[in-house]
Length: 420
Image (tube, rainbow, N blue to C red; front, side, top):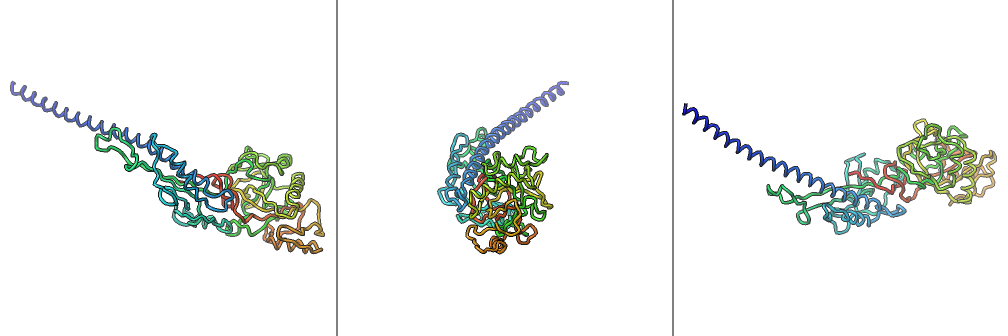
């Protein structure tokens, strides 16, 4: 009996020792997990602050990537990006960037590719020359590394500077950590438009300014016929810019006329959303438009307008609403009146660099159409028709407007977006 008691006591003493060891191990593990949780949370906060700094820098640099008129890449974009990034802090400490000027290191200008015809990613490029946006496809531009459209910024916390200090991980020998964050901001093509970016209540159909290869072209002129000719009237139409309930009734004469030669779109025009449109004839608005055109140009100079671009669908229909896909700058070269003119008496004699003083109006008109390469929707030379607006997309660099996201119709955006 005594031997049994001694044996039980020995077993209990051994189990107590084992429990103590297990408890010790568990406490060590709990401390380790606690240290890991605290430091992971701490690192997450520090890295988010680094990411915010990188985002701010990339967006600031891309915001000024081009000069005000869009004619050249701005080398000062790198400095803007650096200043904006370093103005931010991580845990109250200024972030680090390895950049001392130029286009090397942690602040770079370059090309962002969405991978439409190759690899997706950022390609540094110090070029300051603008790339032509005309007569090239979106895929061609996406694959062209000389198309400067993005700014990349990397922010850091390093052991050479101010690493992220550990809290409890120091117990295991980790006194601090190195962290970094990266951002790429992209300047695309005008999409969502700010108030007054657009000049007149006219919307242009996308397909009328694209060639057969879906390239934006400024080599072909078109006409808007105000509903008089079914073969040519669906290259554009009227709009009230209304996107609140645009598809319930389109727009009307009173709404459109109030916007002719006013201050453009009173509210933002949102990319990808439908907008109230009308492909028919609104005579009161048309009469006001002619008066404005004559006053602005004397009928001897092209009238340069920035207008919204809409998707008119495969059937090329305008109204009662059409989706916004971007913006275009074009030159109105002639507008015909409401009355029929079978004798071509009011055909132009001068427009910009073109002139023709032939007494035969039809001869003048044919020469005018040939000079500006004005084509009907079916590809034939544009006819001399009443209530018609004849235009060509503009072939020069434009002032950036709106927010990135639209399709390429020759206008770069003013506001960048983050793509990485």
